[in-house]
Length: 274
Image 1 (tube, helix red, strand yellow):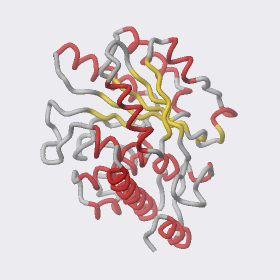
Image 2 (tube, rainbow, N blue to C red):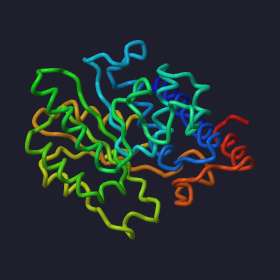
Image 3 (cartoon, one colour):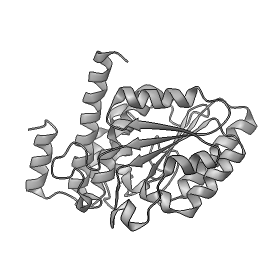
């Protein structure tokens, strides 16, 4: 990837982060920490990787993305806005009673959302069904899912991993957002799910590591997925919770809290908006 394109993606990711903070601040609730940690990944997916079209969001041939950690909907909504699926100004309606942008993704009302999600673990099973369905139909689309690292404490994740490995779903790519924090604290203290790589390999997966905030590393990881033709791929994505906002970075308090007016101004300054 050339330096000009990296610079362009970094600017888009910055705007995605601005949208996340705008949305959560306007709602006075939401989940900024884990949304910010995947901002670069979703930027890469929607602007470099996914075969999707804002003018035809229900195209049967499109790639699918399942945000299994559905509480991080602000990241998905913000990148969909940047990609042209929804108006950017609608981000400020997040979680409002009359808004189509609810606290978790809603596939029935939000263009570009492929699966309603939020009950942790369920998105993994859905992504397996999508991938197997594509295989059975002879369809070329690929299926991507984004999991939280705390989410991998769910038994359903490993049932789905077993299923995908058994059926050799080479058209399926999961990404585990490994930021090390969940609502109750460090994942390794709450319920240690490590080592992710050894566990996935045991279930027959192709395992790749990536720096979640380096576009060349992200690109290399998804290239490794493209080059693997006989098994599903998981990307262990090493990230910083709250990335881009100084007082949110690596701070578990911002898993599910909204900035007040003063904190909002600091965040906007951190993101180059002030």
